[in-house]
Image 1 (tube, rainbow, N blue to C red):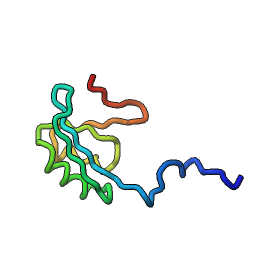
Image 2: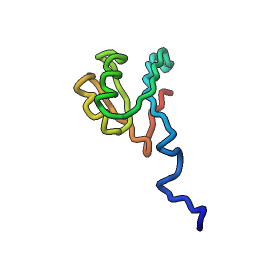
Image 3: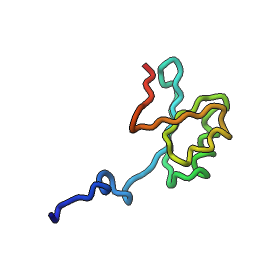
Length: 92
């Protein structure tokens, strides 16, 4: 089995991928504003300043369960998480 691919190595190679942070503002079930930027690491010290500068203080923030988003409750009034394995956000 020379061509066998290990299950954990499927998908993109970690050496040629680019991570991005995308923030979308949704009003009345329509996207009204989008902000996107490339990020080089997913640490809280990188993500928190970007999110705080782009999101109003009284906004509801939905993120996945990544550990860098854990302290967003300190910066925002409402922060909820979505586990993409079991559910997703549907605006309809």
